[in-house]
Amino acid sequence: MEKETTKTKCPYTNFKDKVMKYIDILRTPRKEYGGMPACPFVGPEIDKGKLMIDTFDPNEIDVHGTIVREHTLLDKIKAFDALYEGHEYDSALFVQVSDEVLSKFDTVGYQDYINKMMKDNGLGRYKCICFNPNDELDIDGFNARSYAPYFLINIATRDALDKAHAVLSKTKYYDNMNKRYLKYLHKA
Image (cartoon, rainbow, N blue to C red):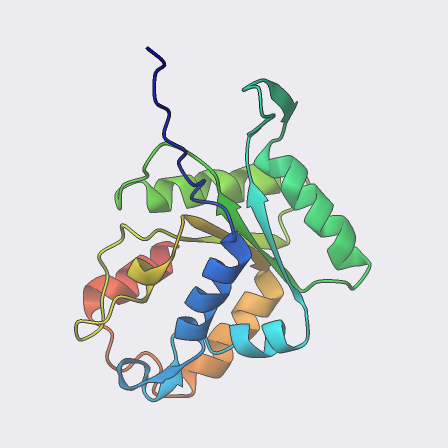
């Protein structure tokens, strides 16, 4: 008797479509953010084609289950850096391909690890911000990160993030955030 096999759909199929749906959530104005989008700068970046969206798969596997290429996140960030220097992209958003589920407790530590790795490899001008769908931070019940279709790694210049923070500080963006949320943002 032949064993029946069930084909399962790869969760990363159409990953860009899923990420774009998430970005639509992030670019929609919300009362929780003082009438601003959760991420007010992603919309213009998408509209100008300046956000690199890609996967980070440490082990690219062929149809036979054989690893055909190994990548490191550093390889991906270096590739982004070359495109950044060529003015093709302003920031990158990597979908972390993994069977391992990262808990809400892992997010900041992993983010710190990535930031240290970049600094140790001459890429300290960039900063990493991770979006974990398992994070439980919310503003008045709305948790933007919970809508992320995957664990996402955003790489942007520290200058751009500092400028964004300065702009947002002059608005009502942070007004509804509780102390826990603000502490989390300052840890990151």
